Amino acid sequence: MNLLELSQNIRKIRIEQEMTVEQLAKNSGFSKGFISQVENFRLTPSLKALTRIADALGVSMSMLFAEDGDTASQYTFGNLSEGRELDRDDGGEHGIRYLSLAHRHIGRKMDPFIIEYTPASPREFKIHDTEEFFILLEGELKYFLCDNHTHRLMHPNDTLYLKANVPHRVELAPGCSYAKGLLIYTDSSLDID
Image (cartoon, rainbow, N blue to C red; front, side, top):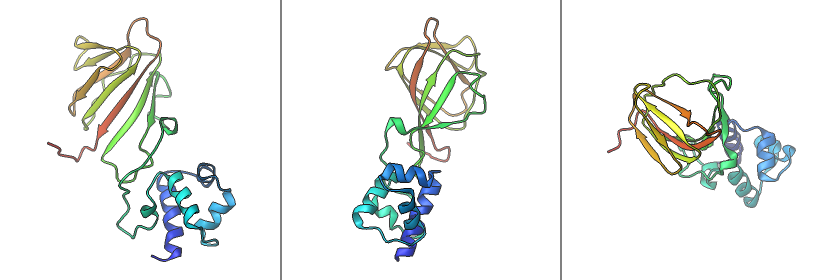
């Protein structure tokens, strides 16, 4: 790999992660101008600088040097505070906030989310073509399965494994004003036994 390809890889990874030059600069401790010069092949960064850039992107150093076709990193570090909020097209009507925890990992086979629940209008039943694993971290929820009569009151540390295509919905338990959980969706193309 030549240095031009290295600079192109840095830009490509940043864009795939929907990260701005400003965000990468802030996360790496470099100026916006420095990152721009690196991406535009106007400046050759040191190995120490590349390490900081890789860390800020949440990828391994080898990922920066990956050839075409070697796009998926073997690991991506992150922090709960770095979750990217997803717009679920309900405008907050249902009081549910989704924070993607693996949005920076390219080629992932599962999607972990922190989900926060606040009082709002009841949500309709949803069906997904993916399997889900849910852990309630805080608060209490009523988890409805298949119909409005089948539900379970969930408490912190309770878990639920849900197969694909099972109708379900969630609402705060009576007297609870906030709940938080970890939800992991699998890639629908996986066949894991």
